[in-house]
Amino acid sequence: MKKEQLAWVLRVTIAALFLISALAKIAKGWIPEFPFIDFSPNFAISTFEVKQLYPLGFSEELASYFSRTLIGIEFALGFLLLNNNYLKKITIPSTIGLLVIFILHLSYETWVSGNVGNCGCFGELLPMTPVEAIIKNIIAIGLLIGLWKIQTLDSKSNIWILTTITIACVLGLFMLAPMKASTSINTMPAFDKKNDSLTNIVNEINLDTLPEVKVDSTKNKKTANVDNKKIAEPKPTKSSYAEFYSDIDKGKKIFCFFVPGCEHCRETAKELNAMRKKYKDFPEVRIVFMNEEAEKIPDFFQFVGHQFPYKVIDVIPFWTKLGSGRDTPGVIYLWNGNVIKFYDGIAEKAFNKKAFEKLINQPYTDK
Image (cartoon, rainbow, N blue to C red):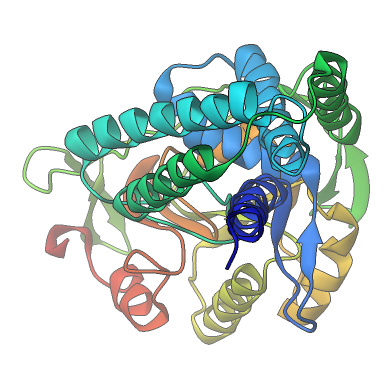
């Protein structure tokens, strides 16, 4: 293979890597029924901000600008690697520099938190651990160095081509996923249990992260006289969910974080409904939906077979309230405001029907 042909193979390979990475960051995931990518820029970028940038100390406003700029630059580099203007003098060194920054960041994250979680390189579309991402970036740098060595001198030197492509890609991201003025106010409709109607909800969302309250069965309890029997229960406390439902901290409640189009969320809600029918004293269920695909909420409840009380909030407050490192479906078992159990995601912390049935039927002193 001639050097020129090899150079083009390397250029196309690395360019594809950057373009796929950028596309993945604006994709929600795969469409189950078809082998297609479900693009949802606002949802995907907001998720990237909450899960990847907020833990680094980015503010909500700064994260919004940084995420769109970063993805725009990834798009630009993908296109510029296929362009001959200043390829060897600017594009290749800039690409190597960006990958080095990624490696340093991922190395620090691995050292601090271990090789856990999704690094976010390919968004939620193609999860990758930090170590896997470091290896990928090192290989990419090796390919770029090889390209730099075999690439002949820049055949073209029009700086306006570089700046125009870069600016166009960055501005295109801001147009594709416009920034919202505020994500703290919920103006979406919510189901009113009393009259089965839609009412407007205006709730100011507290963006504090959610700590899990550990219940001490020996120190933190009181007794209630019900039917002349002493029943131990945790001491009442105020959870961070009272802003959604005023009665959430009274007695036993099940508080859920669901996404209307999420199949796992639907299955979990259906299991909760089956237990509601099975047990007469089953705790009341309250739901907070993400406003992504809110039009699917009626179909959600049709699948479940019952319409639980619900409210809808924006993407960023939803992820923030769910808690750092957590994923949907989120199911929280509350007793007098105390978090007895917190299920989330579809991995080791996923909702378990059998374990939950046993949990809700246990007396407090056995927990």
